Length: 293
DNA sequence: GGCTTAAGGAGCCCATTTGA
DNA sequence: TCAAATGGGCTCCTTAAGCC
Image 1 (cartoon, chains in turn cyan, purple, blue):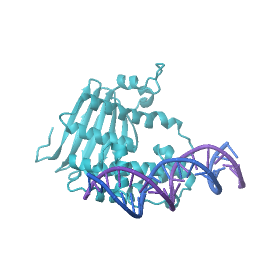
Image 2 (tube, rainbow, N blue to C red; image 1 turned 90 degrees about the horizontal axis):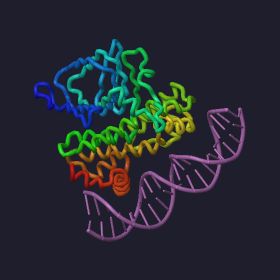
Image 3 (cartoon, rainbow, N blue to C red; image 1 turned 135 degrees about the vertical axis):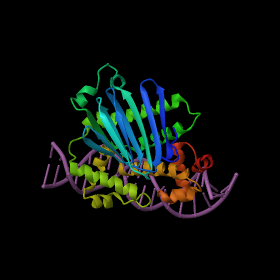
Image 4 (cartoon, rainbow, N blue to C red; image 1 turned 30 degrees about the horizontal axis):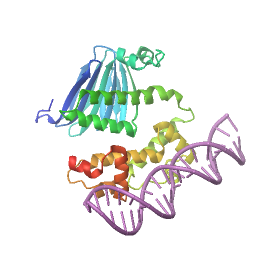
């Protein structure tokens, strides 16, 4: 559905690659503030991945905010929800909804034992949400899904594969691996690690060294390295490298992009090494992507 | 302008050790 | 027991030259 020009610009796409998977790809900018009111009829699980813009959700008197670069795994019993959108703010999000039966099927291991149960998670609450920053690999998957949803020739098979892979990443990160994380990280440590992540993404072109970064966030190098890997599933510079290439992938598709400009802007002073790294991740040269775009 | 290749250095990663 | 330090190996990145 394309938005009417009086309402704004952009679109909302609904896809159903199979019966138990509902996908909404949202990419728009509104001319006026607008609130969407929803009433869910049945218990469900929804993964919402916020790519751009902020979104507030009000459910049963509680309010949550979704930030760009984060995903929210929501468990909902039938409830009323409100989602206010702010005018002139670009907003991009991918949401995947599945029924409880499908969630339970996905959570079964090879022996038929269920690792996580919907009813144990939500208890008597009307709504429960888990939020965290998604990893670069999932960010890349999201990018591919957004592109595929906009292409009329993309196959259901391709979309379904990416949806299941994204769900697998999210369930593993949010529900399964969470319990195995060492408890040595306090709330303050987690907050400092999040600050470290923000710093390296903000200073992508000239990142601080590990020792500088540890001083900046007030955490020793040991905790920075072990804690970062534990929290984000990657080393500090491994995470930075993935983020650099993802940013480059997006920038290369913009009008008048050049390989040299993009490589420098994401922190590669040498376009040749940038091209090699890009090829290693996406299987094509950056110049090829420019021509395709 | 974009890409390939090779050499070499910086510094990151991680297993191991140290010490409080 | 666990945070912190250490050191070797290795990856990442730069530089330079040359080709398309």
